[in-house]
Image (cartoon, rainbow, N blue to C red; front, side, top):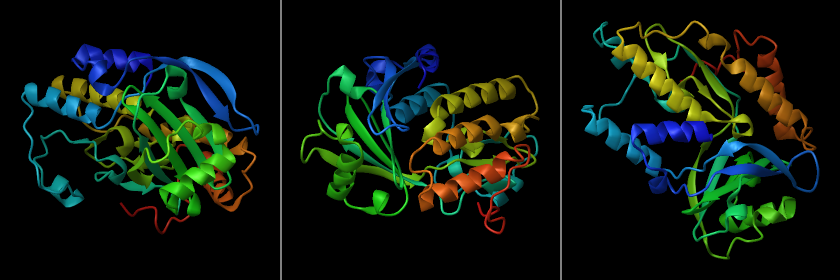
Length: 301
């Protein structure tokens, strides 16, 4: 998360220390266009711990008097039955329940996370990313430990922990050289490729419900927070809750950024990357009305 967005959390009352933040990082290690990693400078960012952030935001909402209705599935039919005067803010993530249509590659790139416990020196916690033959891998850390992520298809993401670490050691040995044996625990997994939604008639899509960003070009968490702040301002000010007029063109810059990253990888001609490139090229040709290559599946929410 950019330092500016971290400042927003502080303003809201979330202390960085409970999220594992004890440093800001200005550089990253990138092994993408070359076989060896290079250090690249960039804006200062913080590495936040989850689910600590989620719990902190939930606590803020509860202290502000927000009432929750838990246990009721959110469906498109349920949204239709709501009073027309009720503002609908859709933060259902990639499900994008209220969307008229979701567009995503078939099959998607899949992400698997692994947690590494222990304390690591600050340079070792900087963000790093490496291209692989079937996807890419990244690592980052904070005061709570390290996270290793692998994104792609096939055995690159399906294998057991030992096989994943062995694959990383073959492609980018620096990524796992300081990881203690037996210290790696499995984390979450799920779709990770670019996805976006065409808004429905009533709801305002927030964060991943509007545009789920590929980690190759992501500041998705910061964007989601900005969406939420904007939505809260609209609702509290009595404005219309419908989607902004420019939301249809929102994916354009992100798609092109991801496409540029994929095109610069030495593995771009491998089968998995070629499929993803074809999908991104198809939608970048008409950014104002993106459609998937498999239109039969694109309206499945």
